[in-house]
Length: 180
Image (cartoon, rainbow, N blue to C red; front, side):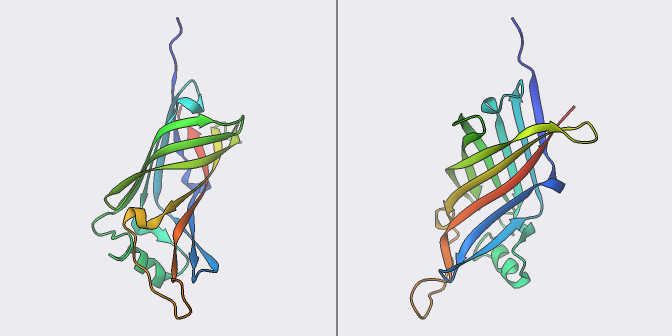
């Protein structure tokens, strides 16, 4: 009887981006990202379907390219970083759809609210970099309603509608490094 080998992968922050998009004034998307984050994958025998994925982001590192907007996002109106400095994700299930496509179900916590979400994962491949490190690439996409997580601030527009959309598109490009 062979014993499964546990593998640990850590995020390569220099080659990863954790981002989001939201409608602004109901007709354009504004993009943002988190600049400080951590993630780890633990699995057996490099089998992605057996993985446990954990992720956290320092919400104070939110970056939308506009300092005033970022400060508003950090405020009580949105993330309330003073009381809730991190957002977290823990996977609960990974389902293989095809060779390169997976559905990752997990618990996302923003502020003090935890909800189950599903992310579409595109497995980009596994290879060695020029220094002999084994890496894996993933593209992740998903959607959440920000109001479900207590991010309810908005402003009405004169012409109808609201300033900030409720649907947040999650978009991430991630490289993981296999630990020796």
